Amino acid sequence: MIDPVQFVFLRNALAAGVLVSISCGIVGALVVVNRMSFIAGGVAHAAYGGLGLAVFLGLPPAAGTLPFSIASSLVMGYAAGRNRERSDALVGAMWAAGMALGIILIDLTPGYHADLMSYLFGSIMAVSGNGLLMMALLDLAVVGMVVFLYKELLAVSYDEEFAAINGLPVVVMRYLLLGCIACTVVMLIAAVGLILVIALFTIPASLAELFTKRLRTMMVFAVIAGTGITLSGIMLSYVFNLTAGAVIIMVACIVYGITYLFRMSSSLASAGTVPDDVTSDRK
Image (cartoon, rainbow, N blue to C red; front, top):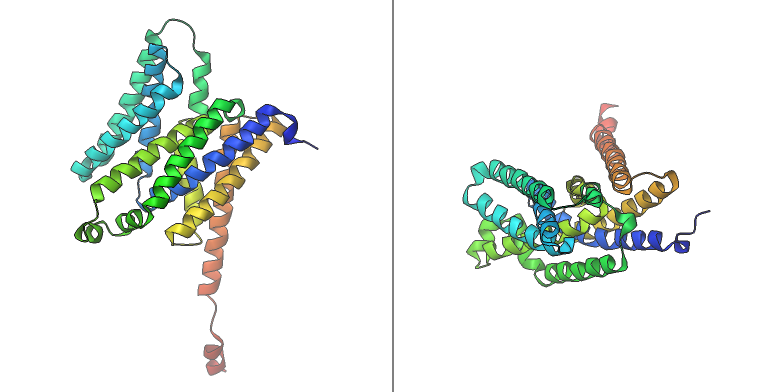
């Protein structure tokens, strides 16, 4: 029987899984409701440019990825807002440009940087105490903002025009949400890597959406589902000596697939049920 408390790295990984799931569930619900999954993926991949910049300047990785992610999210949000018809192309171009910039800057930096591959596929098993502290601070910032501005975010998410008519700062709310997405992306990169960020961003929230359409309930359910999925993935990856990020995403996909099929079969069964009063009339 494995005792997670026995190993410091496993304790840190499990703690990181919980911290990541909190922001991921809350912000992920807003991402799913606002149909911003592509922007979230774009921010995640563009963040590699910040990583390359940090390596090139000799700074800690977070010193590059966090401000670069925030800047990228704001630019993507502005570009998408100005030209909604071409927003996918604009986000895709910035997505590719961020990745390319990061690779070029890393190539220009002397030395061999094998550890940077962990940012592509995640390294939650290697999260340090300082990493946990940064995740906790980002959690506080994200959760505090969402709790404080919940009503405004709710209004903007479901009826942007009505919110604007009622005097709510729609544009400001959009940019604040983009900032939260950027902060959460930085946390998720440490857990599952930038390649798999979009999956963990959307799957727990989409899983919650199968059961409820209320945003508050969706957030709570997404946090719980994300925590269970992440912790299960970490333990399975440890037991079978597999890459933690990939196992977490695979667990998420399996859970979502089974739940979706169950909900579909239940809906079909209920739709095909003939009411008792109809059967009695036929008799």
